[in-house]
Figure (cartoon, rainbow, N blue to C red):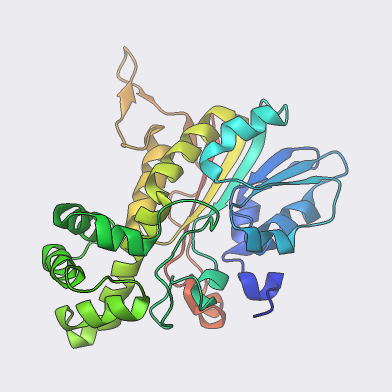
Length: 304
C-alpha cells in the first residue's frame, strides 16, 4: 500500500483546532500527534519566519510525511516524553500544543497491523513497531482478571468477565494470534445488533493497553501544563469518553483526577481558563466527508 499524507490520515476539526491555538507568528508550538502532517502543515502556514514547530510521532510510517521546512523539527518519540525532548532542544516554554488523539486512518486501513477486525491479520496493535508488547502476547499471557479489567475499564464492556473467561479457556488449547482468531472466539458473546460496536470497543481496549495510551496521555498533559507559557493554548481532540474525561479534568482542575483545589479564601485554583465552555464537534458536512470524525470532541484551554 502506498502511504501518502492524504491516505495516512484526514485531519479532523482542522481549522477549529488550529484556530484554538491563537497562533503567534513568532511562537513555539508542538503537535504531539504528527501522523499525516495535516495539522502541522496548517500550523506552519500560520507561523512567521521566527516561529517554530516541533511534531511528535513514534510510528516510522509517519516519517514519510515529514515537512521540509527550517521552522520544523520532527521528534521520533512517544509524546509522553514531551518535557524531556523540549529540554533536549533547549526549549523552556511553548506557546501552544495540539493533540489529535485519534488513531490515524492509516493504522485502521493497514491490513498488517491488527488494529481493525475488517482484516485477518497478526494481533500487533503497536504504534511503535520497534518495541513493546503485542496484543497477541497480552491475550495469551495476561491472567483472566487482568483481561477482564482491560475490557471493562478501557472498552466499557459489560460482559468483560465473560470475554476474558472465554479467551483464557480457548488459549489453553490454541493460541490466539490473529484478529480472525479473536473474532472467532468472541463474536458469539455479542448481541447481533450491537456486534460491530462491541467488537470495536474490544479492539479499542486492547490497543489502549498495548500502547499504554492513558498513562502516556496523563504524562503528556502534565508536561504541557508545565511547559505552556502564560496565555499559551492547549487544543485537544478526543474520540472516546476515557481520554475526554482526562482532558476535561486537566483543563478544569489542573490535574487528571479532576480534584478541585481552593485557596485560603475558598477561591478555585486552576491553571487554565476554558476557551470553549461547550465542547466543539465536527460539522454535519465534515462527518459526511470523514465518517471517522463522528466521535471527535475538541476542547481548548488557555494557561493563566
